[in-house]
Length: 421
Image 1 (cartoon, rainbow, N blue to C red):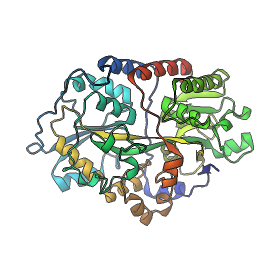
Image 2 (cartoon, one colour):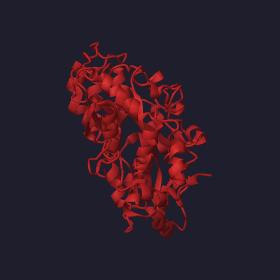
Image 3 (cartoon, rainbow, N blue to C red):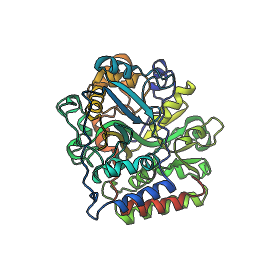
Image 4 (cartoon, rainbow, N blue to C red):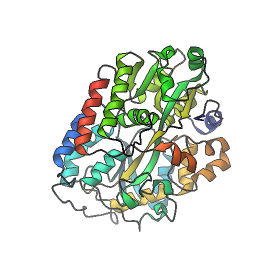
């Protein structure tokens, strides 16, 4: 039976630990996806390697005690007032001054901004950046990022604090980077089914949706929204049809896209959006159910001070991805970047982020136990700390796409969602 979080006590108890909503605001599809995929296809050799072999910049970390980190919005403690408690503690501990830039609003638009420097192996202005699995896979494949020096990151060794689920081994999260030679996970992101409890019950008579098919109920016509991230929306739909999204074929993709198109054309789907969808899941009932990011609904409930929004992890499967640290070839402060990575792989620091309202999955062993000691509901909630069974049976990665597939699939996706996205 699919697990519903409709009565999750986390939403009440987390209020005491979060002063502001923490939500990953991003739009990951549309024309930009097509243009960037086309660019990546053009700049790669047929075998996938960059035409130019790049070498790491000279590292001056020993004499320049600075590091610049580009990240997504709502991914750090103290963002609303720019206090950044954990960053300040790192600065005091190491003497390294951190410039934390909220510069990533979208994988594609961020890449477009720095692609010329990345291709040339020049300084992008960021010593480390956090981007999503599929984009990180492309950066690694094209030789744009440095190999990590684990002598500076002992906390992130699998024998230390890196959660084995994220270690990059075959079948584990991060398997685009076996052994995590080039990347380290920052936070995990669960896509699932979300719904407004009162409005869903009012329209359908049911307490909660239990399948993707429930989204297509006639009573919900015009009240369903899905994510503009192709990998999440189609990934969840594929799994509902029994397709392994780690191995799907082109026919699987297009058959599922046709099913989505039918719901778009038939006006069952109200909109296809990035994180702005969350504003439509309101008491007025503009959107009542859909495919969503779990952390967003947690953040919205915290923001408004109730638990009106529920999340369902489906037995058929929810998608799971990570935003990951990498160090560009042109970074002059690689060792300093590795030191801040090492710091955030301390369980006590990861726990501070979770308790402060960063509502995404920590990849750091030992975090859950520390959170449980202060907030048992939060620490035992599978939206934040999935069990081994949930990792194995309910959370799955959309397989990497080749540049050709990315260009082709993104174009087809954009054609279907145009007019509603």
